[in-house]
Length: 149
View 1: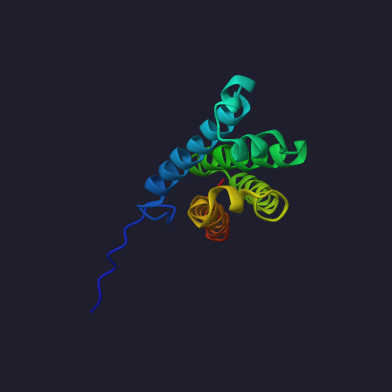
View 2: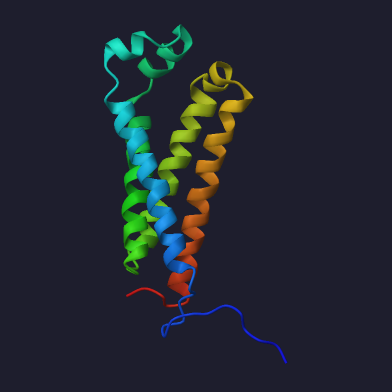
């Protein structure tokens, strides 16, 4: 006889769902803070950076900045919708994931960020990409299991 150790509410939503949604909100709000910090960089603040980093900041095209905005705001709104169990979280997470992919494409294939930050500078972008993908899959699972309204 086996016992089911995973508890769920009356809608079949796992007990860990709320914790995962709150962690998603926290993660994506950190991304929003990073975006706001990036947008608030004054010329004086940029001038204090090493020359190579200054060149990175000043050469970011508008489309990469827009992708960054889609990534963080799509993720934050998607996380809020996830917590509220609203199916809109799925397309928001897809928009966020696309934003992350476009932003990372710029960082790794167009700009010289790898040369500036080295191999250690790839850890966080890879984490961002993986977490964005996990959130898309999580929302897809919730949609498939009818966890959302």
